Image (tube, rainbow, N blue to C red; front, side, top):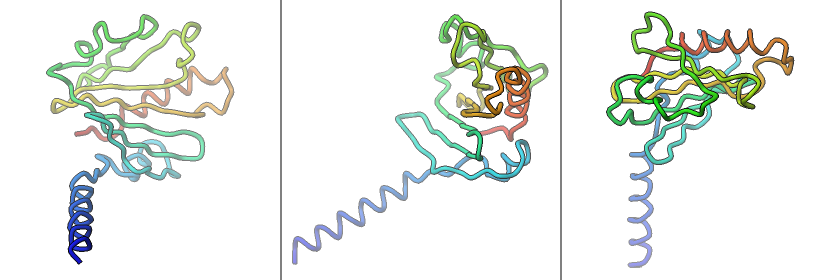
Length: 161
């Protein structure tokens, strides 16, 4: 009987801890669909250490949002200084209230050149918005224009946190 009581207490404690750690996405499927169009579903959020990750999927690609501490950095330029591969540069989005920057990669020197990303720092959080998957329908001739379109859409998502 005593063993059952201990097991029940342990189970309730674990359920309480799981409930305390439950994450909710900082934006909704509706927020994503307002910018990217219909057909998205949300994955369960994940957290590894200080990094929170949220994904929204459609049939062709995934929008990934990562939140991590900014470690006192006030801008992406400061955050990424010396922290990016040589094939990556950062282009400021003119008049952006959060100082958001677009990640640019040299197409011929980086196999991740097709991955559009936008980053900014807000409320002491580093926010990375990224497209994963086949947003350009495997037509490499359309990739540069589609990549730019996706970067612009990422920059239009509701700002968080």
